[in-house]
Image (cartoon, rainbow over all chains, first blue to last red; front, side, top):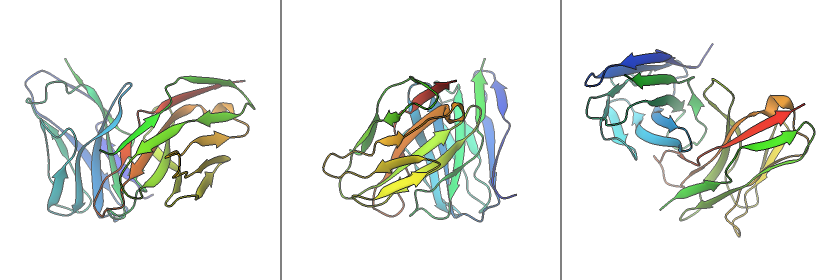
Length: 113
Length: 113
């Protein structure tokens, strides 16, 4: 089955630790995205990538980093510089960056203890 | 800047009631408009879309019409079911290449039998 796989589904982290969330897609999509979802705030864009080896900051990129070394993978690192990292993180992909038809993973819930 | 405003929820309805979820937008140019749905514990799924003024998107009994004169894209369904209980997100994409989606804050719909 084609789709987007995010892992882990739940993750706990101590303050001061970096953590990396995985996102893999087998849809052969060029574009990939990371959104953060908080109660009452909807989805906010962290980073997006239109093509391999290229990515752009979204609205709330501070404290996060990404890489896009392979077409199918777009991992997100939540660094210790992110002041309020507890949230639900959603990865998505689209055929290219000209379409608004995004396919989403099931999300990763990060809790900082 | 570009933004999407949705009516605040939660919206609570009885089965077979009529549903309207309001969405208005602010954008320069001619954005494409979307409704996404998020069922409990899942990622988002595209519900319907419209790419130009007066277009009507429809899917699964839901409809929304792109109204440029009122900058609106209200979601409607004539008879809701319990299975429609979810969070609904309105989103826009500007007409420029390489721009990611901008989402509203989401509206929670709860349908009881």
